[in-house]
Length: 140
Image (cartoon, rainbow, N blue to C red; front, side):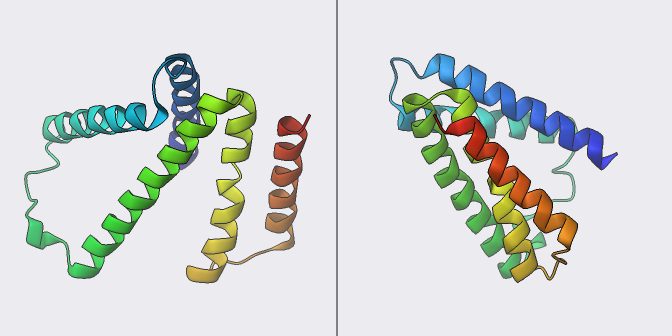
């Protein structure tokens, strides 16, 4: 089931690039990122309420470490969006998205360092192929 969710995530991420590129022609990329974040937050609150995700929630249900990691994740996501939307405004959606997907390579490296995930020969080869693919798509 995780594969279906991952493919749906990839599809909607692709739609983000297309819709954003179309909408960034005459608007500041940082402003668009802020507006998008507000829309996303509103959508997620409505979705969470509709699916009863807040029924057992209290601010104390997460520990300090959990809050810290959620905070860091949110900040990293926001910084990523700021750079992504700026790159989309300045570059081609296909090239920007190809380079942006190199986040997969960074995840592989960081997961090995911080999460103890194994870096097998197959994983390393796959990561190298991702780098090669991004280079082929993004270079002139």
